[in-house]
Image 1 (cartoon, rainbow, N blue to C red):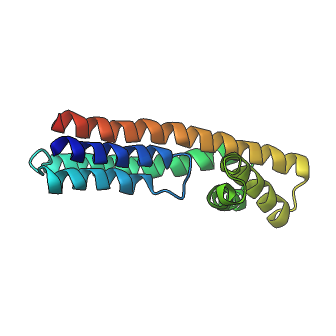
Image 2: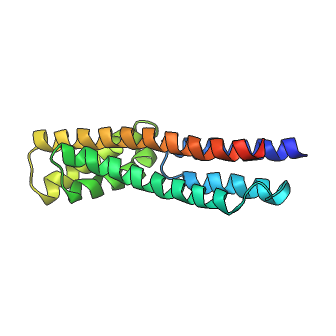
Length: 160
C-alpha cells in the first residue's frame, strides 16, 4: 500500500514540475499535496516543525525568485511596471490562446503591448523589452526547477 501512496505522491510532484512551464498549474500546491497525501496515508512522523519551516522558506524563495526573475529581465531591457503586468497577463493567457508556443509568446506579446499602449514606445524598443520578459521567464523557470527539486529532495531524504 505504501508503494501506491508513494506513486501518487510522485505523480503530484511531476504535476508540480509541469506547472513550471504552465503557470495555470499551482506548482507549490501540488508539492504540498504530495506531503499531505504521504502524511495522511503513511505517516506525518518524518515531518517535524523544522521540515515545515524549511518547506515554507523554500515556498517564499520560490515566489520571490519567480517574480524577481521576471522583473529583472524586463527592467534590464528598459521595461516598466506596465511591461511586468503585461508579461504576467501574457504568461497566464498565452498558453490558452496558443498552446505550447503561448508560454513564451504570451509574456513577449504582453510586454510589447503594455509598453506600446501605456508608454507609447516604438515597436523596436517594445520588442527588446518583450525579449527581456522571455529571458526573465526562462530564468524564473530555471530557479523554480532548482527550488522545487530541493523541496522534493528534502522530502525524499526524510521519507526514504
